[in-house]
Image (cartoon, rainbow, N blue to C red):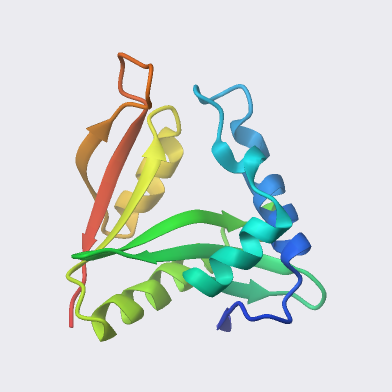
Length: 157
């Protein structure tokens, strides 16, 4: 199984940002508006690791998968979920989501929550397969059409 770790001050935040960029590259030209990921810096990732929780699965040299967890009043929000292309289909995303589930249960949060772009139907299906259900639709500022959906998964104790 995969070892999921919390990002700490000695982790390579440039490598985490590179993983995010590589993992989100397939969205270029597919989603509108473009991902906000391009605006994140290494220092932003370092700050996220101190202000929130970044879960990592590491390879021998580089991170293979990550997710940023944000604690909300009734949920743990999963953001910037990324898996290296070389390891997709190997269960890394599931391992991250299961760890997030355990953290949510420990913190008394009844839900895991995430958002995915409306165009990324393969992501909708992957998250549904893990027990997430669509709960809302949203629009980015300036758009009069749905640009994202919110999905939730109940946390069992």
